[in-house]
Image (cartoon, rainbow, N blue to C red; front, side, top):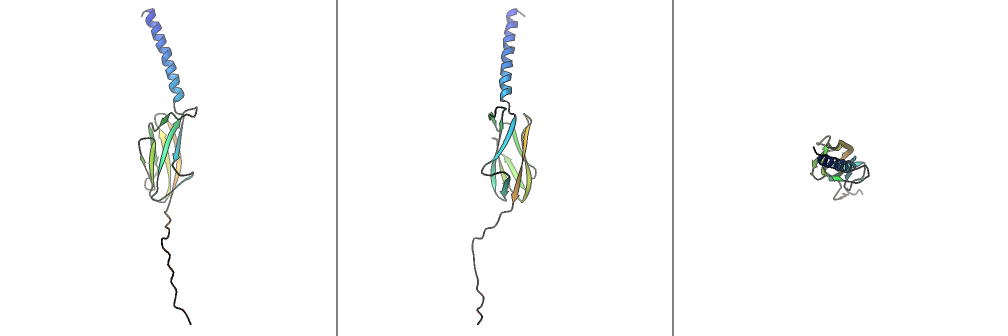
Length: 138
């Protein structure tokens, strides 16, 4: 190798180190979950659907990635089922009363988290009211 080629390789190595540092600083270090319109703890009524959004943030708190390599799983789909929408969101459907664990994660970066989702029975609300009078007594 010539002196010039060695010098070029050293420059390339230096630039690659800088790129690697930039990539490392943007790497997600935390994973977060948010259910739209539902406060914590998460309680759903049978038949209700809700969207969960999973995001990742880096050490600076920036959200560099939404939905990349994210999976969302219900511990018992007979109580609450979940469908991954492929965009960092998942649609949950409350199926039957009970409690499940919502596990979400990113296998590429080794990040994961859990939430508890409770499903309660739907309360029937009366739509009519009626009254009846008995036979009057003398």
